Length: 258
Length: 265
View 1 (cartoon, chains in turn yellow, brown):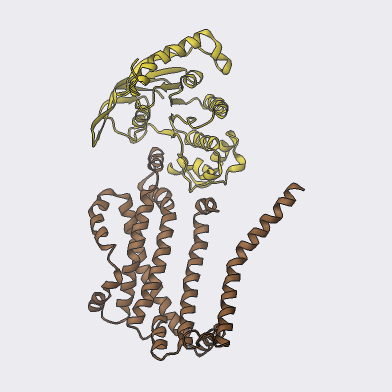
View 2: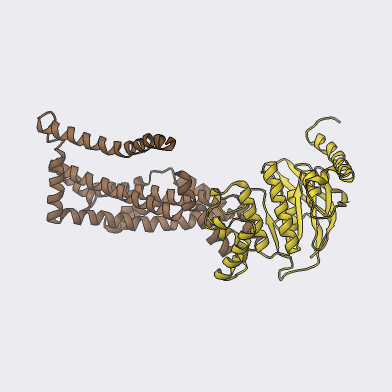
């Protein structure tokens, strides 16, 4: 599964006129790749992800997918920032939700869901409700739900944004482990430059609103990676390079003169 | 040792909290009983609790109370079903489907604040003074709280949950059964509780005005014949009905909405 995004534009018409969320976004996502999209907050990252998922229609431009399903769209599974789990379903039912929508029989989908719940280490919580879990545990359930649905690509919208640094590091490692095992295309949106470099095969840097891709950067790192890569001079250089690009955007969005 | 020391006061506090309301009721009844017996309170206005209990026993024995209570119960339940179910369905539909909401919202907003009991004479003109007009009046009263709460119940579901469902390819039927119904359930149950209390209130009010059977009629008759002990007996039964209904609803809420009930505890 790969796809090409071509000159994608998205406008929202609101009471205060037209908001240009995306303007001419062009990039491609390759087979089995971990692609990170990094950008300042409010730059339209989430909008882009929702257009790729088919939750929003683009105003103009197109996305060409290498594989289709029946309705002309590949199946994607999205992991949301927070509160993506259904509070009225147990962990098991939440994880099995994608399979349930595909019409998989209860016994089979529970088996497959349990398998993934085990992979994220939450077996004792299969019958718990989301409000009984910590934020970190909830996001692991969200990741299990996305992987179990057997979608052609996974779309992640800052899934670890609300977590403390330590928890985030552990979960990033866990995510990469599961991703390697399943060899799926992951598009991962974040505002955290270091996270993008640590996770991604490639990093697309987005400008502030209206969002467009300013640069694509190949991360020259082997896996497994750990925190020590932060000290490699090349990586530090990339980090500063991205930060220089984003700094202006952040200042602009805050109305701070540079 | 530490936990042992800390546990005892908290347990004692819990016990006190659960027994205190009961103790207050018992004390009030005892003071009441004593006041009547010692002549402080007139038995004409405030018959002693023991007399009321005996009256209830007598009325149950003669079958009178059973007939009246049954008539009231039938009206409450029929009115609830005939008004609450359409209210629930229309409320869910209005919450889900925006064009319908926009079309009907002004109508609902205009009709809702009107005290529905005021429509009773009109209903009696249309449906006659028989049983059907009473049930229709109760149904009209229960329709609105059910409609407004189930609509609010759907609208407070986070848009993310609809997006998740759409993202995983949920059919409209699955959106209904897996998102809308469970997501709105906490507020639907609030609506059911309001509707139930209104149904009981309306039934009694209507029976006071026009009925040959029912607890409201019993109160009216007791007033006309100045049998205050029977008046109190009917009041006690009505109170018990209200408490019983609410207990059933509370219990089913805990069973139906485990993700909510636990959070409250």
